[in-house]
Image 1 (cartoon, rainbow, N blue to C red):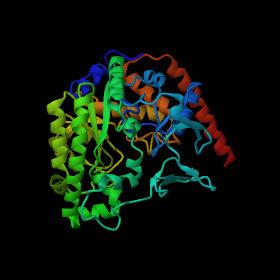
Image 2 (spheres, rainbow, N blue to C red; image 1 turned 30 degrees about the vertical axis):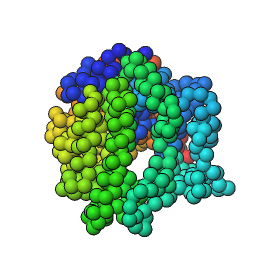
Image 3 (cartoon, rainbow, N blue to C red; image 1 turned 60 degrees about the vertical axis):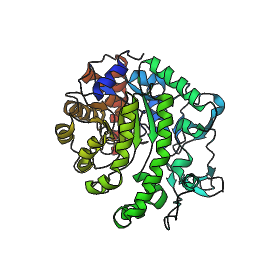
Image 4 (cartoon, helix red, strand yellow; image 1 turned 135 degrees about the vertical axis):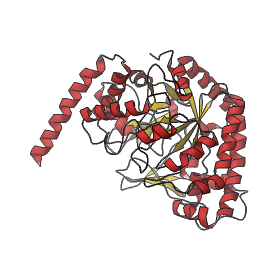
Length: 443
């Protein structure tokens, strides 16, 4: 069952006080969730049967984490939209690339090609997304402003419907024009608040990423240096649209939401996409305005999603008003956990970075994972300001025993008793060891 302290624990952590236990997230953020394939394997390993795997993020093919696993892993925070569509006719079966079965939303109707790949079509029958037969996520294929910026942005909202990410928004946002949308979402928020967990709402509000969606990444990253006037025109147009949504969202849900999450990518593996000076000129003023509005009209905290190496940007993100960063890709350049905590840990909460998904979770042994996570917890936990989650989404190939070992380490650090987990972990680790031996024999 949910601890009555979960929400208070989250709020305490975000205010940089040490909570009684490490705050845990799995799936509230779509950057630290779990692939549907990995989720199916995890449920099988834990002998959880009779429950559908709902793919709520169709582009990244991420699974909605069921209540029983939220309880098992001690998850303290959830997204407000998690149970918005619950009726059987809201979902339909699909066979994933590993031949396991999940459910896509009923409205998601990609076309399967003869070679087993999938095409996502818009209302004009243009292919706006594609996934190969062996793939585990969809790629964007149409960039509305690829050739040039338009003279005006009067049709930008229609243009954005050609963008895969905006054509298929997360969860309830697809229903935003329905008459009962806000009533239903508010009722869901009240239900989650009563459950004891903290409540997150993802706004999106991408600025840099929206430019990439419209112009393509290479073009837009050149634009911010060679064509800043058009970038500023685009950013202003987007900000005006987003601000209308922000005002309505705060009015309808501001008293129920504990964390508002804004999405943007500011970094790549080797460093930021831009200099801090460029960020301050083109994007920071809008981020600052959003954060200020949220804090003026609610008691909620703010979170910025940004992948990549963003060490150089963090002082400006703090100044812009962001209270937390997710997912904290510590596997990138200049993102050493100890340095991040030492230099910025008093001013911003690190929401992620608890386990490396590219070199550890998918490759190491369960024992190595356990040690790795404990080391991260010792670095990030002092003084609060840390929410445990991975450095990015849990990938399809991650063995279930490694996921269990990861959360077992958090339990051990917290002193949280869970008698089921050690026996399950021992069994799975033995299976892992035997499988590796068998592969060596075959080689």
